[in-house]
Image 1: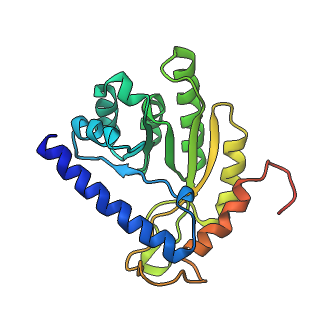
Image 2: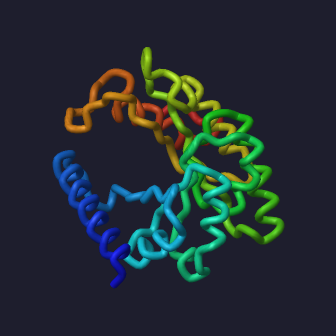
Image 3: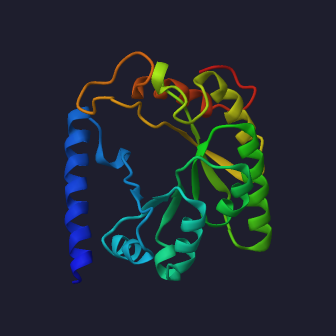
Length: 215
């Protein structure tokens, strides 16, 4: 076992322990939680080690780095992984991201929806991908100084969800958000903006087909 693999194994065990504590405190089941290991700035060899240690979801947020890293992975490793693109995305990069990402977590405007659908369609036609591209809508939960950390404002989420549902090559996975700066991870969820509770309030709108009545 290499020193690097041992280091990653130790770090991964610590993360799993923290997750176990968090879901126990929240009264949730382990199966509800998916660990996405963010591998930006780390080499493809680390991703190979992580896959061997049981990690099945990895995240990247720099298109140029991510595309090259995914291409470097052995085919047998790539088949094990779900690759998430988690960074804010420019529309001129969307077509390339759609070639290698399995999930794009940062859909925040209609222009990105159109660009990803077009890119995914091209990749499917060329055989560089074989399934629709899954996406999540990024919601901006910030208030005051925290506003604008990235994402669509909650009021815009239903229209974005409808836009994704109307595409041919995208599949809506849900919503995501970056936690506001200074949020106490040990405190219970707040009932006002900027909390997991307010993010959850957006989720039902993303699960309804266009034109269906509110839940």
